[in-house]
Image 1 (cartoon, rainbow, N blue to C red):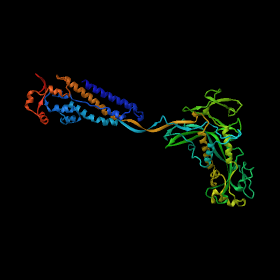
Image 2 (cartoon, rainbow, N blue to C red):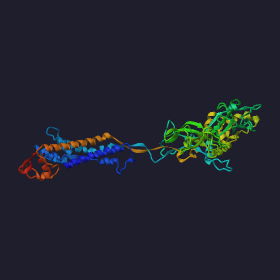
Image 3 (cartoon, rainbow, N blue to C red):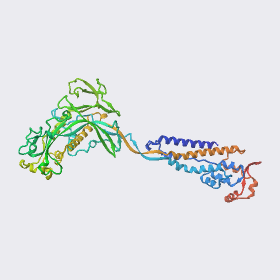
Length: 578
């Protein structure tokens, strides 16, 4: 019984190996599978063959038809023989039930392969790609400028100038469209802490209604002006329908504004009905651009990167030289996956190396000799700076765009009021001469504070794109890193399908033990099993053999065996079928 015991041991070990393998790799991807052979092929290696050869000898302790030995032998050789054995026996008192169990086990073995193939199921799953990087550009410092001619006046950086023109003529739809986030699979996630993903240096734009600042100087013809235009020779009602100029008075927090301009215009009171003098009115706006600190929540949705503005705070002027830079020290910052307080250090250290005069809220930069009243040191991720170098380059460029600009109607003053409606509706606005950005801004006389705000926000978003993608920061400060998710094939284990091989192995063990115990109970103890030599050495006794005479054909022998009942007994010549 050594071979049978070894066979059961190997089958048990194989089944245990399958269970352990499945438990380890459940919900893993196929890429995690380390072997050249597939997991389904490995499971297919597990096969169980449970044999019942020994039972044909113990069966003949009592008289039975000789044909049974043929049936038992065929059953020991494969499933078809087992089916024939089962078909030849109707359950009853004389049925070899233990042999039938063995036959059932052997037949059931045929189902092991299809059952084992059902254990493992492959399905599509999302898994993190450890190689592909997900990154969002951000900035703490911006100081880009072009060429300088006298170390005072700087040309604007080429990318910033393009961003300003695009912001005026073809602006991005939102802040996410102004930058390029890196997500190779279009399915990325970024850490979100208290509803926020990251903070960045940005540009903010807004417009405020300043109609109350209009100076009415009407005499025989309408005459209106603003403090910023009062000293100029050009007045808005003489030959212009829109006029913009650099602001000459304070509006809001002027210490945070990089550039501010005023715009005075004739506006239609009610859109679609501007055909009489009474439907037009003077209207004024004060619009500004200012460096700011913005906090965003970011994610990818349907393959597109999206970000939502959570908060915004303006930077303040940093007066250590003229023109000033802009600075803000954040109250807290996202660091190492958590919000960290931006508490200063009284001494300079490896991490705290940005010097700030907290009494005047200014950065003591490399050009400053004033050490300040209260010098504190901050980490670089807490300080956001828009440097004077960038101010020197951008401010004059904006001034060239917005100061002393107008849309001119070329209508004589005496005919102006009667022609006023035609300037915006009855005649194309393209007949008015002036900058294209001012035409877009004016919106055919339907400009409102809300539409002006959206226009300036779009311009600011376009500028923010350059600030975030071309910052003057170290590499580790320039990006917010997230996780890239990729669709892969994963392994799902359907454990109920494993119950059949387990049950089959259990029946095989019980069957083998039953055969061994049945053999040990009797006086006959041999381990002939399926050996054909047993029939050669211990065949029919001479008397039984002579009853049927000489049988030459297999079919004749098979037919005769159905009529002869024999039992295995020990006679003078040894064990014989008698």
